[in-house]
Image (cartoon, rainbow, N blue to C red; front, side):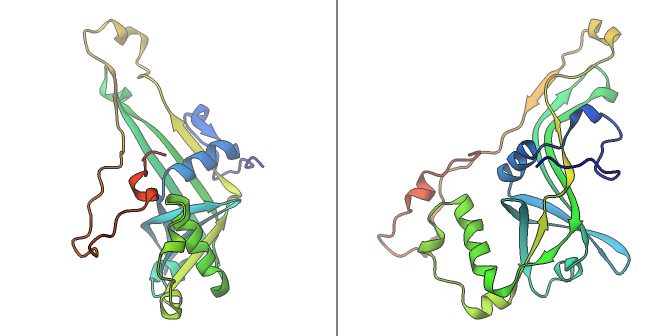
Length: 215
């Protein structure tokens, strides 16, 4: 279901870049595992970077059970942002320089994932990036699960913001002898770098040798 536009999710400027359909929002969340989450702790705002993953209508992130930020986010209002830089937009004036980018900002009340669901959520996170890897790993022990907190947020309020294409200069500036255009920015997976303490004869599985980014 598309998201309802609210007072804090609507775009005040460049509203044509706003997208509230779930297809656009899900595509950006699924394309970028890194995010930033905003919390309020003791009346002051804090933003922390972390990893996120989406399962259906919810987005999840995890960290230490001792984390002040995660403890502050339990049953509290949070703001989560995922951003992808696609290019630098070079215009004919400094004012019209911009970036081509995709982002999603979500608002809502975070909830704590119950202890009995932690392992499944973490396995889904790993397999979402490297299908089949979770089953190969040593299972998390009770102490590791206890030391891990997972928060979730329903994808209910928020928006995607997307900019693409060339610069939008003032009409009279197109006559100026200044190069304008876009510098594309790409994030790519490189060659595998093995751990020097790998056991002899252990070869990387297909989900690593065949890993491609972007997917």
